[in-house]
Image (cartoon, rainbow, N blue to C red; front, top):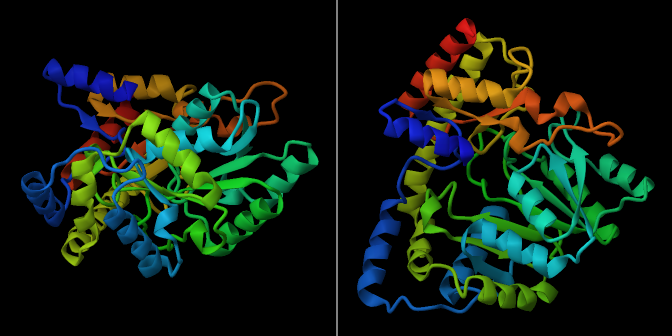
Length: 384
């Protein structure tokens, strides 16, 4: 967001800026969603809803799990939230106490770390890299247990932000079983489901009703600013999460809830899948650009709309490199430090995986924008 702010300041001064830093679609919500919103404006009061959301939307999301994954989910276990961000905050508050140990991957989404830290939890980093396809493994969890660091919770994301990697179903099932067997709450960030380039996405709800799955209308459904997400939570956490949501937000945006019912319609899916086809084309452009500047892409970018690229052969500090790229070429990318705090002596983390060695490139924009931005990035690299 800081990079985005700097880019906006440059744009206000008249410089053309290419935003490859923000993880949001460049397209509006599908046509049926927009039409449903218009109808709701005319026919609904649009006051507060129940804190856990309107019943029709919870029922439709449950049907989505059955249709998409053959996973049976009780609508009563679904809570509708103000984006996935509110879901994570409520879940962390409901499930963990101050001092609880919660594991997450390095690299991983910064908001997990920041929110857990603000709530007084102890974050345990699990280094992921090429050897584990940038996802946590059962062996790494066993290693934590052997070190006396068994976590109370594990957060994983598939597809991942920033790497885009997807856990294979058997690996996800194995991690879920380990968490079940070791009294570890598995929280699965599934907000990029629907955006994949080969591997299929699977949900933790296929393996145990004691897991938590978090979803969102922001990414695949192209409804970022509508601020709508959901979580499937175990029965014992439904009321605590619902009460917390009532205090934090009262309810998720009512207009968004009614409109989101249309996001699952065939015409919506047709439009959204066309976006994924564009992301696939954009991905090819980014991968080819990285190849031309000899930048290794250690993460395979199976899904989402990110490439996590190693730029250690180009600079000593990716944050400064990104700042120079923005200032000189107007291309905004995200430094890896957002996702992978640098290792410190004695912490057991691999310095090769430090965020100072990486940048995240988002290819969620238009194809022309991505192509022009990569041309500028290549030119910057060759002259820098």
